[in-house]
Image (cartoon, rainbow, N blue to C red; front, side, top):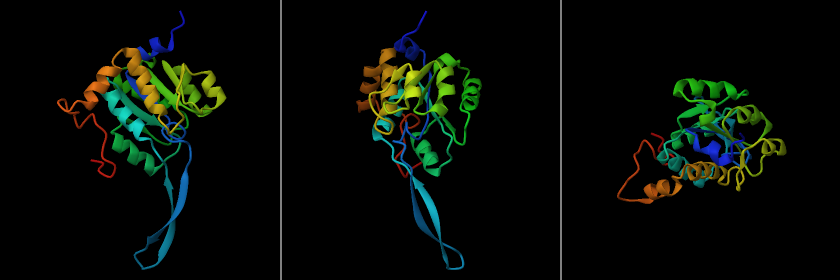
Length: 205
């Protein structure tokens, strides 16, 4: 029997995202920054910057209210990614991973879940092995054609512009709990636990 996207989404306990092109629009800004040395001289260090969507950040909180855990798996290694992951309090953070099924298998072992209970959101061909194995494969709106062709669901928004939120909301809607999660998120009588909510930008504790 062929499962629908909604059937697949209902089983999800963990949502994993690529970073560049999914949580960002794929643009990588690199700019020079002068750094003072102990001897009084200065050197120029290249600093990397990325932009992230606040809608996706709120989606992380909604996902947690829906009982899910979240993580990122990316080939690049970047301090900006580490900062964003700490800000979002992601449970799983893997950088420098060219073969993304390795961390997926590690997460399965740690959490005691099956592939059917993991969703993977990607945009490029490096994401295909994980998308082919995980129970619910999501492609962002501007993903490569080969990736869209193998996805169970394609988000209406582009990477870095709310695509991760789209994926989360589709899963929560399929589970029948999206409205409840939103109600809990905005109810001042039911404040969100600090362990569930995202950070405060520079306050990464």
